[in-house]
Amino acid sequence: MANPLLRVSDLNVFYGDAQALWDIGFHVDEGGVYSIIGSNGAGKSTVLRTLSGLVRPASGRVEFLGSRVEGKGADVMVDLGISLVPEGRGLFTGLTVLENLELGAFTKRARKKSAKTLEWVNDLFPIIETRKDQQAGKMSGGEQQMVAIGRALMSRPRLLMLDEPSLGLAPLIVKTVFEIIRTLNEQKVTILLVEQNIHQALKVADRALVLKTGRITMTGKGDELLADPEIQKAYMGTLRKGT
Amino acid sequence: MFYLPPIDILLQIMINGILFGAMYGIAAIGLSLIFGTMQIIFIAQGAMIILAAYGTFWLFHFFSMDPYLSIIVIFPVSVIFGLGLYQVLFRRVARAGKFPSLLIAFGLMVLLENLMSVLFTPNSRGLRTSYTAFGISALGLKISFTRLMAFIMAILATTGVSLFLKKTLIGKAVRAASENLESATLVGITPHKVNMVTFGIGIGLAGLAGVATATTYSFGPYFGFVFSLKAMIALALGGMGSVVGALMGGVLLGVLESYGAFFLTGGWADVISYAAFLLVLMFRPEGLFVRSSGSERP
Image 1: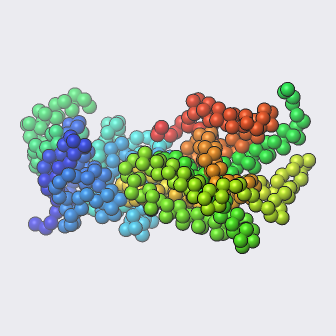
Image 2: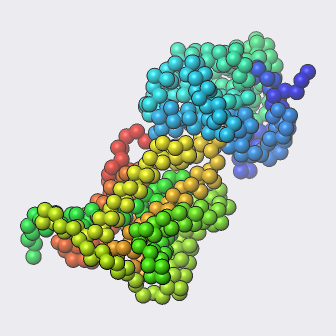
Image 3: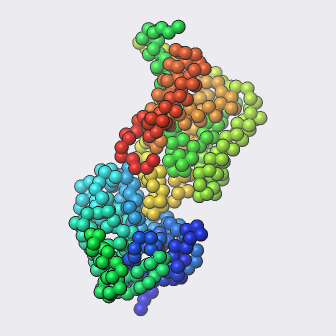
């Protein structure tokens, strides 16, 4: 088989003296949806923050498109094609929707194509075009999530990473968010997804891994994990009560 | 002791205050930009202004260059100086947090003050041009030509910076980085680049304020510190992170000071401005000209 788009091996990450990730290794194939699931504080976000360049790993390797990229800054990573929609969306709330999108295409690689990319994003999220002059912070949570995803897409990512895109959204909007993930995947965007909404995250995923206190406890195909009795017992039971 | 003077005098004081305060405004915009991206008060801003004032003075003295014409030298040189200053002094420590940057800014201020004192002597200087004492009379009010020019420069600078921040991609990047640095790096904005841009513009504005200072007042090597303090007060009045607010804060401070100096005595002007500073910080820390809702960041 060809080289995967992203290969992570033996990744160790610390916050100060506290180790947050232990020997993380997995790979993401081009065109797929890969989900990372686990409970609060398991280190899911840390994986994405490390891959996006916001956090430097203590050891391990990250190969993207065949070359080593670990330890590079976030501004470099996005230029290489790894784009993160952070938890809480991280929009520039005082700027307009359009300005947010324009800045999404800040890298030289993306800037050249920004007009065309904007058309694509507008097609994906018709709401964005109608609200383009509105202050991003004044939109609803669901709309903000769409702007955040749209902004990440403006960078023309090879790998789109979404950190809890459904967090804090109403159930109906959550459904929309997962529909968007499916649509993007049909359009050949490779997605690495972190979610606490485990049922949805596994349903949409080709492959997934389970994180527990910074270690991988399980990996497999999305539907296999979904059917796994241990996962159902550990995560789904509590989740159904919650939602 | 207290009497109400005729209205034309009150108006005259107000106009003097507005014109005077516009200069605080230019200095405050520079502070505001640098604060936005680096989260430090660039305390050396005042010393930069005085350095530029000396530049204007010497250009006039040696080359008979008109002070307003000298803007075409002073402004670009200040911008380049600002860019270089960031690269040499701040780039390495910017990542280490605000405190080292703040200390460096303080050290820079003291260094510049002493350097100017040694090179240019501690005596105060003033520019004497043919139009220094020139005034415009209208509706029974007298407006000093050089102060009016300073005011116009402040308006132009504010407009220029506002347009830059609103219309250019790099300007938008500066606003984005001021608001959320992490998200800014995630879209590919390099923090050092925006820091450098704000330093370039900030020191460029100090250059303009220096020209304005040189044409309107006599100045000495140590005058900058008070300038920095006043710019800081103007910022607190106007609200951090708003360019127009910074200018309005400066104007308000100028008006407060000139009424203070008239109704009480000169020494009270400072007491009043610092008291206003504390009161605003206590009761409206987001500034007088910033809508209090909408911003989620403290």
